Image (cartoon, rainbow, N blue to C red):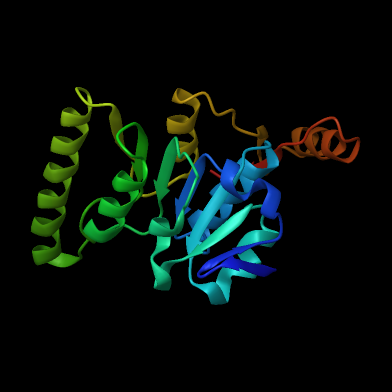
Length: 205
């Protein structure tokens, strides 16, 4: 890992400026999954996180990391981003993500402009957050920057469905019931034979 300019880290300097998708909170659980899935499909993804988590994000498949403590997406340089996925939430992350799209593209948020709350007071806060999200989504129908929310509780599938709408293919290959021994065996054999580049998901309903 090397710092190619202040706050910008990479293993692959030649691919850095070709990133078209950014993930805010790339070192979080959700962010890590999304980076991995997109990178496995050959998309050049840049992650936004602290420099201390930069190496892990790069090893996860990102072509670059923008240090959130030194400007985050403001450090993107010549990158022309089509999609920004926010796995953190909050108004600051939203503002930086939408600004980085430079007037066109798709902003996808996991949480929305404010944090989700708990209890009675949190319930009112969540209603307000939901109304803000709905308003943003409706307004984006008439804008060149689209706005989407991944439903809560969050499933990675919800994020990926939004990406499919933008022409990004998912890599989920098999989803099988955990207790269906024959189906699990077939799916594992398929992975072992390298007939898929996707992921195997075991479902326990």
